[in-house]
Length: 552
Ligand code: FBP
Image (tube, rainbow, N blue to C red; front, top):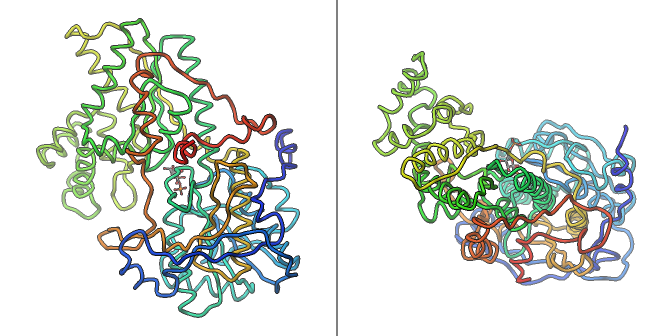
């Protein structure tokens, strides 16, 4: 396979490990844990894995090889830079425990376990993927491991391959399912351990014991480079407003971190919009006012960051989407009536007539293209595909209309020309930054030690991550500790609590403190591309979010 000069040089990088993982490891058992909420219900649902103690690793003495073990690894959900290093960390860790140990990769995500599709990972394969981005070593998928029949299919293949443990590399949902699987395998006395690793560029799998999910660091660095480049272009040509939508299905951590890195004129944070119960019209007004104020200084250009999940956090849009989902659900008479209509105008009028008064007003105020997207682009269950809605274009159209009104009123004297962008997939498979390369390799190595010590229902945890890597603290956290009960598809379920942007925490407060100035002045910062070779202040820097959260 042809590889680039950078990939060739980068493959030689030896990821840095916490001191405790550099040689033989001593396992220190800490205090017993409780779930973050709903302790009684969670304990009932997880009688075998609830309340287990925290585990930390320290440097230990050599105790010789452990008995031979085989392990299976699964990549679950969206790609995140560093996944290959988690796998190489597990692989090297297992070989350190006993050179006869084997690692199998299940292909195409959790579905590979159920369908018995797998490959054995060898030195040659692992070496080819060290320090590379992507999940292509074994592929990923979004099949959810939720049913006992799937778990039992998993047992079959584990028995066939003598697999003693599975490592699930995934986000909050996948790790929730990993915990259910661990509990089930214990109850059924299968002897199969399950360990989770925290992955997602969205950065919303974090808590007291998991400081960050892997991939966030690299993804925000890629986006921040691109945003910085656009800022410089905007500041050179001085004629465009750039509306940039940033990935992150629900939480706005990516938008917030990119804002702290680059200082745009406007940054929308979905969690704030929800908290203040802002309407779409208010958001449009806010943006239009910033544009008007900059126009007073002849600055008819700027950069606006829009989080991908925004639409669902605007209360009136959320209600509208729920009503549309009910109205147009497969099998509903209204859905059939809607389908029978021929022209777009007829369809629009039909929907406006059927919605509640408030929702029909909101729907009528939307630009035609977006309104059409809301009613036509639906998933197989008939639901609106919120992540496909082009929020950045919606805002451009509505801001344009508002500025025209302001021109009439005499409150805006400028020219408005906009460009739209969406940064998402381009950040998910970048070659991992030093932080992600080291963090992921450490998470993988941690998983192998947890497995070697017979642990199950734990997530790999590596903390103290704003310090140099040798000072990082590795260990395991019982997954039940992160759980609470939430309503999902009409039923209360135990799930890992998703971490949204906290409006009283340091990262958001930093934005709030500065955004007024960044709005009117041109305060752009140009982070440039990720550096893999060079001074440590440049190459090993973590995110502003982590630094601020850790009080740096
Ligand atoms: P995970 O939560 O599985 O890590 O995926 C996150 C994400 O990248 C979101 O930011 C985005 O909305 C979504 O995946 C896109 O999903 P898909 O790859 O299926 O288009």
